[in-house]
Length: 154
Image 1 (spheres, one colour):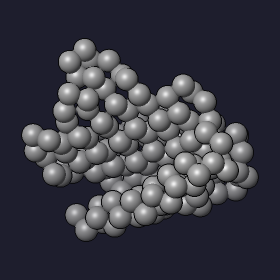
Image 2: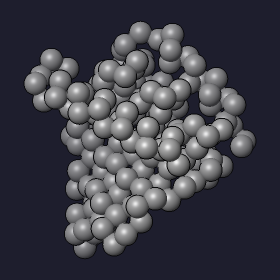
Image 3: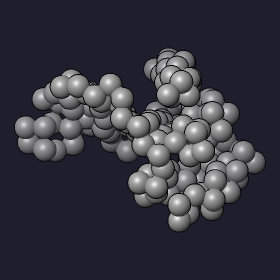
Image 4: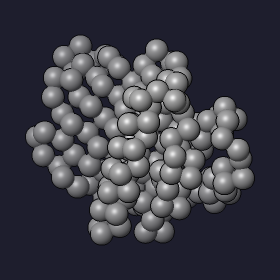
């Protein structure tokens, strides 16, 4: 509980920022604080099996992070971060479990439910007007709402 209140005050700043690189930097800062403080949130493990699991993290019964892991030779780990019911960030990491090395990573940044930036594995921003960006934005909005609703039912 050491920095939760400061963290949520920082999250409030996002609401007043325009869509820009500065918003991406602010989201990075907020997510870094969330990640470092995950241990202090209430954690619920769901769907734990040989093929994967889902971990839910709550602050005052509100989901703030959801981690979904699909196990296999190439493990896929997707972390979802929320603020006041809205998706603000996702991080997807594919790891070769045989050699214990990261093979691909992507990050997405969201403001008012819209994806504002997508950072690919080469650390390059994907063009926001591309069909690929628009399609991913739509699918993340839908799936983000779905897993958030499911987390509320816990």
